Amino acid sequence: MIKSGSFYFSKSHEWIGRDSNNKYRIGISDFAQSELGDVVYVSLPEAGKAYKKDGKIGEIESVKSVSEIYAPVDLKIISVNSKLNDTPELINQDSNGAGFIAEVEISDDSGIEALMDENAYKTFIADSHHE
Amino acid sequence: MKTTLIIKNLCGGAIIITMDTDESKKTPLYDEHAKMGAKIVSFAGFYMPLYYKSIIEEHLNVRNNSGIFDISHMGEIIIKGRDASSFVDHVFTADVSKIGQGEIVYSLILNEKGGIIDDVTVFKFSEDEYMVVVNAANTQKDFAWINYIQTGFQKKGKDVSVQNISDAIGLLSVQGPKSRDLIYPLISDAVKIGKCGLFDFKFKPKNIKDLKHFEFGCAEFKDVNVEALISRSGYTGEFGFEIFIPAEKTAILWNYLLKNSHLSNLLPVGLGARDTLRFEAALPLYGHELDETINPYDAGLEKYLSDTKDFIGKEALKNIKNKEKRLIFFKLSGKQIPRHSQRILDENLKPIGCIASGTYSPSNKFPIGSAYISDSGVNASFLKNFFIDIRGNFEKAEVVSPPFHRHVKAGGSK
Image (cartoon, each protein chain N blue to C red):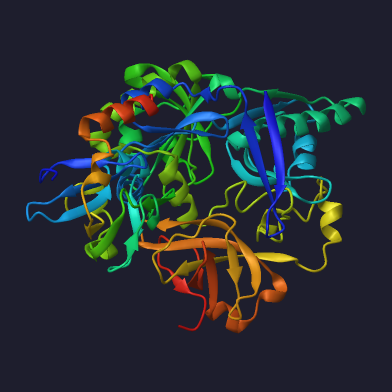
């Protein structure tokens, strides 16, 4: 089982992690939010719905652009972060915490183990964006 | 090398894409933007800052305090000669030669069919000398067009010369209600005549503090010895200045003004907020509200057409009897942001138009947009009830009268 407080990342910049209550959460990475700029709207996934890895679960709009949010692993949405409806800027302020997208259920950790850990993700960003 | 693609979009307009197969150019401030950690994008062939920290914060700071923009990507073309006045009256739709020395006029450049080549501002130095400030994306096109017209003039024995000085000029814009608190204490009081940076004033301009909107003068930023042509103009709907300086002095002045940011709560502002600010003020953007398939009547810009002189495109405009389309402004009740070229649907979900500009309004905290709609699609019920097709979601919209940043008046009967 993955440790609580650690995050695993997809190549499309979503994370999955465990919170202190041992629940799984998903969100978008701090790098992704900084690339998007001011987030002004989030179309959230449906609670109760199951999504396959890389399936589109929602959309995130900033002033200048719109991006799709993908499931980092096979998962089922337990509940969504409805605070994002009125305060989408939580994603800019705290993408790994208060700006999470949803609480999810997964069948096992094998999907997560195939993702990048924080160090691998850092290297991935540095390699793909020479800025 | 530049490749230009023209794609007919769904709504009948053309999308013009200019691809730089070479590297984009850098303004004299590129290194400053990079040092400040700006998010850099390629726009109109230039690497430009999209935002430094936050589009919304930069936008609101211009509305409430002041902001400084690098707009050195914009083009400047000098038109000189004994026949310069009759030349500018021929090329531009507005009454350009009638303005006074030290005054500026907004104008369109039309092609022979009445389509909009560009929207520009023209500065008058004298009967023999004008400067045209053009959109960055159109600098090459405008210069080629103006040169082509000039060749015709010259063949008739007229004396006009045209020069593209864009690369030699740095251009900063200081905008916002507190801009004067930054500029006034830093400039010399004396009115300069004669040489002013790269310009030559053959008239006595007004003191900068006395300039009205769309007037310009010359002053020196004392501490850094930078002479600047300063105009009371901008693209935000706020009080502000545009400052023309030699390219090599741009970084010195930029850093000097930012060092004095406490005078006006100044923040650097990127192109993202430049776009949201201009759109709230309902100022058109070439490539969105304007292009060569759109005429001045479509765009609601007929007040910039002179009735007292001939200009290129005037003849074609006389034959435009029925308005094919018109520009409307709207707000959305939902939260999704409308984007350029999305479809407008009437209450029966019939497509009747296309979005010109769409964005989030930081001043109002709701999405806003402009669209060209086919004129037959316009009736009273439409104005109350229509939809934007945002990636398959039909979002309800309502017509409003801009500008969006003062008080938004509903155009329907809500």
